[in-house]
Image (cartoon, rainbow, N blue to C red):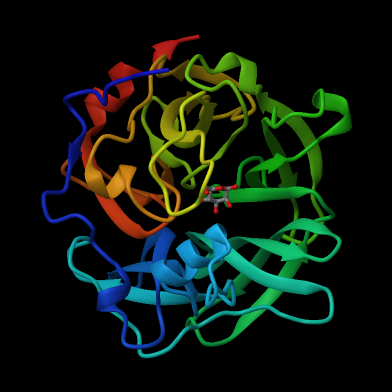
Length: 334
Ligand code: BMA
């Protein structure tokens, strides 16, 4: 499978916008961030995998002495006045660990009701869970819900619809989807962020021409006059081994984009038939897992510019932008 990123999508020439060297505490891989605007600033919550270097990983994977996989994960925070230049906070803001929970990662941020709702993935000894926490200050977080396994990649809409909170999510059904990684995007709603129901299938992986495996929600949707604009990630498993610190890596993660009905977001009204971002640059193709684009933040500026933040190669955090009209035109009616 081979695609090209459309020319209206501009990668920021200073990419990455955040990487381990910017972080004033132990950090190795900085990626898969959520971004929103809150209290007059841009705010980013990012995943930090730390405790193992590239050499540690390579030694570990190749069975060499000294190889270790002692990495841990925390969620850090960074602030910006322009959405481009970021200043990280002095310490991580969120970790989850107990007898069952191994770690929380891949945060997505939604500003709603004057506070921040952070959705995140949770690895546990009994499966993958999707978590939702609320904070006003990025110091105190209240956990509202942790889903049953296996589910993750939750993203919350920035306003209630029909009086309810609404999210997209990605369960991981194995038995009923043929045993492979054929996972789809689902929709659910909640009166209070704790109890979720009203489940609907939104998009099946087989409906995405550039996926031959799983798909998943990416950044929380953005409201436009034409509909809810939202990115998703799409996985193509390819025969050739891809450059990566991780051996035997065969998955290309690209970003897709679709448009949902404003009043009834269970309905898809448009979709890009080819990827919006296909891994092409060195920082997207080379890293812990090469050829991975994993968007987690999207911001619509008053000028019509849309900023898209994405983890690249599971190693650094990047920025691309496009004009809203180009993105809407790219979503062909379905
Ligand atoms: C997914 C998640 C993401 C990661 C991606 C590519 O399964 O673990 O956090 O970015 O794989 O490695």
